[in-house]
Length: 266
Image (cartoon, rainbow, N blue to C red; front, side, top):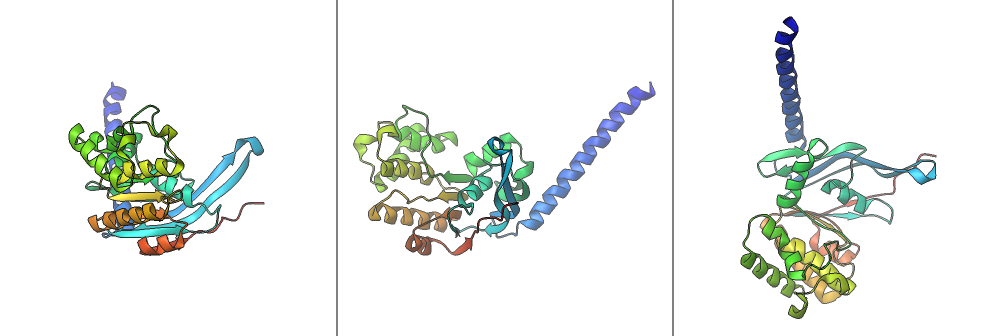
């Protein structure tokens, strides 16, 4: 009898303890993320385990701190192997952190990424963070116009409105209209990259992560992407990007962080 009466009380105590822990985590996140910041990394480290080599430990990032606010673009620089792309993947939640954390504003709350559920991370990717990777990865045999309009359809836009906006951004990025109904699998490298960019810039995102967005583009299309980034900043986006073109970097970035390859354990 006592055990039956005690069990609900113990459960209530555990629930209250979890609530207190969540409140403390939220308070710490709010303290770590200054009022004018949209995204911050605190002591972010990432180590990969190479199971075919021993296993061996490969440190990709070691204690990275950064922050960026609305209408700002932070450029990541550093030599090959310094972890620039890995850092973007950590900020997006693709990689589980070895230590440290990522804190960001999502809708009306502050989220600590390491504590976020899979459902919440998916919601963040739909509503808050747009990510341009180095390569276009989409479902095969889907028309380019549908690929680009998908982020708008996901948040409730009508198909007509979404297709109209997708067509406008494809036109700005010089994708010929005759290609809009075709899947991009057979497109050139530059065309695929422009579809990749269109799919993100078709929507206004609070946070943008850009991984070498102009690597396969000619001068005219680089200028178009530069204009899109500047317009996104003016709308209020907080942007973190890897830009190997130094002239382009200086045109779009308000500040820079240089990464160095982490020292590996002997």
